[in-house]
Image (cartoon, rainbow, N blue to C red; front, top):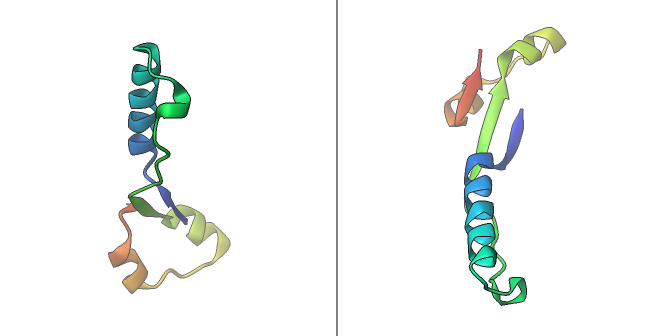
Length: 67
């Protein structure tokens, strides 16, 4: 199970910063951003291997379930 930032969004935001820097903006002038979206990903294969039963309520809340 993983609860953290959306990696695709983080890479996209990083590319935005690189673009700005390459266009001449000083890194110190760029604003600091925090993660705005997090995802819950559950890997049921690993849970089965470890003998962990994941509650259905948690599965319904997950953004992605790996079966």
